Length: 370
Image 1 (cartoon, rainbow, N blue to C red):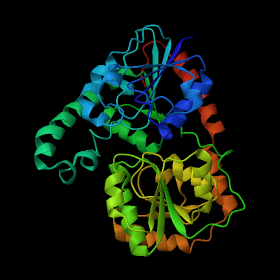
Image 2: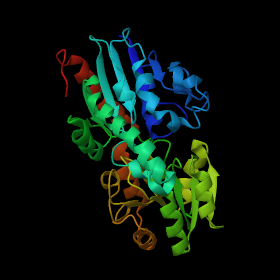
Image 3: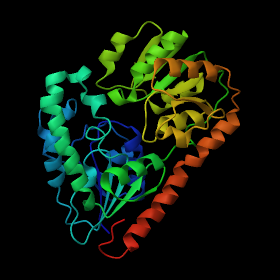
Image 4: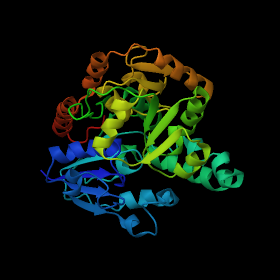
């Protein structure tokens, strides 16, 4: 059976790429099709595969300024020839789910999220305060309105949707009018584990530095609480965030997995300040025995046990988050219990559930969509 793995783009090892890494293990002979690829940016398991890129790869500065080319992505994803494959598995938060399979080919979409820019997070990326009134009204809003229509209209190209959380399953139902089972993403609880390290008096964020993550909120809340903050990751928001920060915020940039594990172990708590579709990093922190402070929305409601493995805050405000930072300081953290919770999301469990889901998709009657 010939298998194609279709992924939006390969520019770093974030949550989506950790899912793709597992699929590469399950299908070592599969081809990977992606809009663009920065060599060496993803795991060796992914890099070893045959990686086919679209013509977006040849556009100027595509990897660094890809959002400028967003209106071209629908044509680029449709340009892939999938006629030689028996099974297509798309891992999608943007356009990968709209790859066009051959008539005989099964297409399973593991959906990280319907396209955020076009639906409920438009303002986080293209709000007036970010791009200006004229660009918001005359450029980005019309483009994203068309993208949203296209996104919904092409949902039928996938025979089956699987969501990364109940939260995303609800968004798939709302925007695509499709049902989606839930298979939680993999957390490497073998690698991320506690150690005999005394936690220090600072908070930690491990994240891509993009608008919807709301890292600016965490910076201000830590300032108000008089707490130090360490931030691992990079992205287009870094320069703006550095301007907002004082001496108590350390930007560490991208780090190795070993260094990130050490950061988890030494942090007083991990902060998830924005609304996430799922969030692997908070579970990696819990696998290391550390509590999480998270917004009580989205995937955090499925991954953080309030008052036990962390603290949830209700409002997307500095006051609400700074209050949660105070509360987590008084939380009696039982390392073994925090880790046991994270083990429910292990890589092994994800692989078992994905195998079953893929087998069901292949065995379903021809033309089935669910």
